[in-house]
Image (cartoon, rainbow, N blue to C red; front, side, top):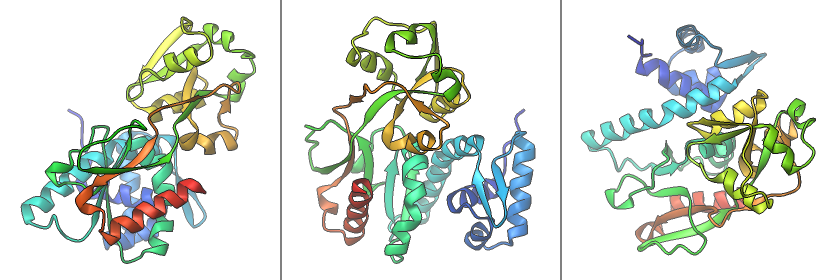
Amino acid sequence: MVEIPSTSTLLSFRAAARHLSFLQAANDRNVTPGAISRQIQGLEDLLGTRLFNRHHKRVELTAQGRDYLAEITTPLDHLAAATARIQGEGDSGALSICAYPTFAIRWLLPRWGRFYDRHPDVDLRLTTSLNPVDFAAGDYDLAIQVLAQDANPPSLRHHEFMPVRTFPVCSPALAAAIEKPGDLAAQTLIHNGPRPTDWRRWLTTAGLPTLNGARELRFESLNLAIQAAIEGIGVAIGIDALFGEEIEQGRLVRLFHIERRSAHPFQIVYPDGKATDPRLIAFRDWLLEEAGA
């Protein structure tokens, strides 16, 4: 039987991952930094892998740490939301946001502190999910979704704030053997569950709609697919808004100059009835500003 970490340990890990600081996580959890460190060490021992790289006065998530954070965030947030509803605290004043796991980990959380620096009085509650948000249920105030540019959902407002541009990426070592799109026929093509058609659509854009890789691998998340590409397992489809850092650092190489711009960009979506909420306006405007930057 698989041993499941305690909720306290998972909450401590999530706090440390979001702050990238055991000290700030300890302040959030009202415990000592030593207690956070021991919980993280115990979790790493249980999982058999390192979740953080420790540096002087700071920590950073490993690839396994980022993936684990993405996996546990949704169930923890669902537990918190369910508890709040039972306790009658669902209207506690926090702005409730829903976003895709990869978007939250790769784009939103690295910028999270900048919003709090500007709006320290606005409390945010983030949940990650791959499913469309049902605003009628009243669980969320705002969602970040991939939505058609010409979509007109009833009783909802939406703002396009970031395009989705896709292109092949791989490790530098693998890129040395790939000169033209046709060379992909000799490579392993890596697919991901949430965006299963990205390869076929990009290949169509590149004029190779019938090309197949020598092997086809499928992973359940975009994070795992990209990590597999970083490790040199094959070629994946990247999204520039989410994986630009890996390209800048040289961990990934963008292949060719051909990109496909999706007709379904990232959009900010919220109900008409929330349009005058000053907390939502502050967060919406901050998202648009960050995307513009």
